[in-house]
Image (cartoon, rainbow, N blue to C red; front, top):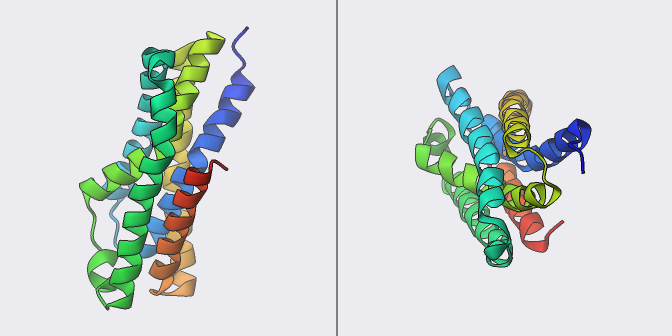
Length: 184
């Protein structure tokens, strides 16, 4: 089959939607994110979205069934834990601490949780014999752009709704985890 740029772009957009949603959540829960921290979110989300298809491409079908069966569970657990923590901190009055707190550990866990499905896309790319480097670059760039846009949109929404939006952010992360677990 020949490489299809439009299909690759649409796949990249689909993969970036979880990163966009999580970034939007971080935008309305972390009011004091600096430009460099916003860039880190974009780089981590885009980087993991670009890396996972490459790993899937080279790992191939040998471990595909194992990873596919565990990927949804791992993504769900990570997002559930982070979402429940956000809700707990908001309800216990610790929301000021989390609102302005930036954590590389949390960014990394969120990036992994939202990019696990990209691994399976890498396997598909291998089966279609599409060029992995071009596909991976497109996927990473789209996720990077969507993540940064999500943060800015989340910041705007957070300004209108207020600080208790953190509860909604936690619920959104949990719902994304459930979506990943159920395979929607």
